[in-house]
Length: 213
Image 1 (cartoon, rainbow, N blue to C red):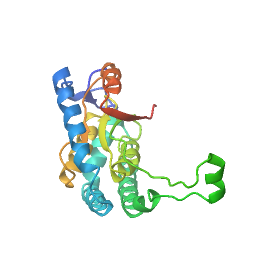
Image 2 (cartoon, one colour):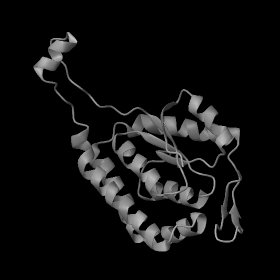
Image 3 (cartoon, one colour):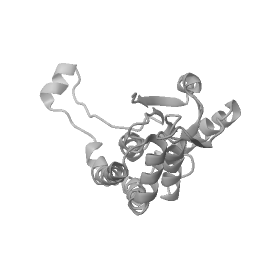
């Protein structure tokens, strides 16, 4: 399937995009891996500040990105605006709550005894580069529902979006960059489905999230 914006109302191809080649994919993987080494050490307060900044940009640009979604996949404009608003709300929620959700835990003594240990503590640590393969039907929300908690946890993201929503995909990568996230912490990969297996097998990719439609 070509990477293109095609008006679903009339089938008109409005814009096409070149796929990344193997060298370009390698550059982005290397950049993401390097970015993780620094980003994983940032304070929750700094991650929250950046994520709230992304939410504020999204609020200001709600009409613009809503029109893009409508043109690319046919969502009614009112529904597209509501999706953008929901995404901004989710970003703010994770900015407020992620630190508490990821705080170290001290299991009850009974649970510790069952494990055979004398004491225990649960730590939550970032994994690294997370590859997200996302669908077309909620092109903003499906990405943000992964990106907001993943970034707040100190991970970095690579987005392989559906091939019929490339402008929405590029907007998301640009949104996080303009909000101030360090370079390569969140990147959009314009690649076909054929390229996903090779990316997924790369040892620098620590985790994957997939939503099909």
